Length: 107
Figure 1 (cartoon, rainbow, N blue to C red):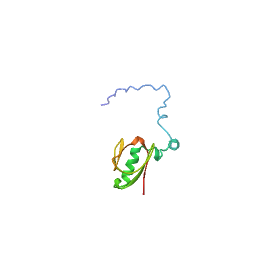
Figure 2: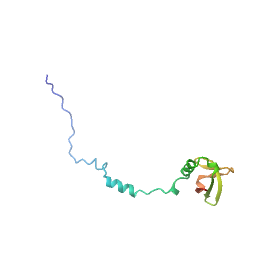
Figure 3: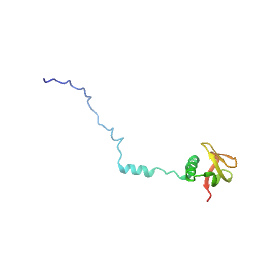
Figure 4: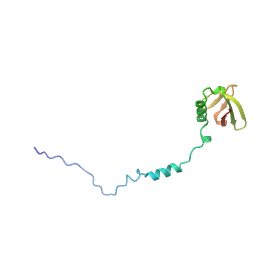
């Protein structure tokens, strides 16, 4: 009943193994990596995401007066809608998001 099993071919390891060194990192190193990563300021956030936050914050954005700072002037208006490239105001002004420096709600 005793059957001999075939021998399994195994490659000979003739060099030092270092494959885990590139994958492993300690908790201390991770903290240093996270701390050295530059934080994004709110002003560095894309204008599209600033508008997303503004629309989530206010239930009816068209009722709120906003101050839009452009590269060359400041507008005081109400926002009707927006998309990935431009912003529409209630007075039918189309403003490109690339031209906007900042948007602030007026209280």
